[in-house]
Amino acid sequence: MHEPDLEKLRRFALAVGLVTLTYSVAGISLTPDAAISVLGLTFKVSRPGLLPVGIVIASLYSIIRFYYYGFMLKKSPYRVRRGVLDELHCLERPYIHGKRIPVYFGPTEFETKLSDSDPHRIQQYVASFPNAFPRFARATPSIQTHQERASTMKGDLCTIYSAKVMIPIRCRLAATIQDIDYSLPIWLNLISLGVFFYHTYLIRS
Image 1 (cartoon, rainbow, N blue to C red):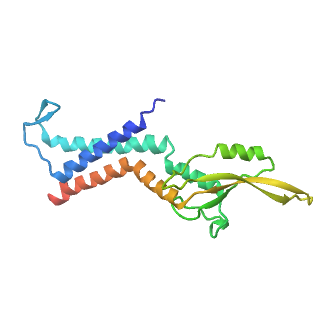
Image 2 (image 1 turned 30 degrees about the vertical axis):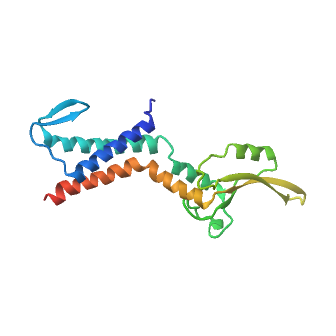
């Protein structure tokens, strides 16, 4: 199935949101037979009352389309981070008892649920670990192999390999900003539509 360029779709949704917001806040109105010049071309608007309808439809269309392609068909950055944290252990209370690890705040040191006596499996896991949290202000998320001695049920000693993950607070702050920016086409259009209906129906009535 053909999927549109998400970045182009994002730019289109942001542009529609800004147009809707500007139209509402600036109080733009057109008189019958008004003329609009765009790139040197003059357009005559015979039915200016239908212009707000077109703006609202474009804004709603942008919300639905970006949500469908950006959140339903594709994993958003938040969903990727949520999946990473759900695969980690935290040895701090109350998370050690099974409480879900928050995405944007909370502990910074974790251990992977995967542990094995074969170091190659852990090394492959570390190599394929998703780069979910951005670097920010010289803080960088890290994952490193870890080993410790353990006893088998027979009492024999063996080496168990796992991995330790560190996600600094600054990286989680950057993740918050990234998620807000990613979902901005939806929030901007929702705010713009709210402002539009407020100015159109509440203030004028």
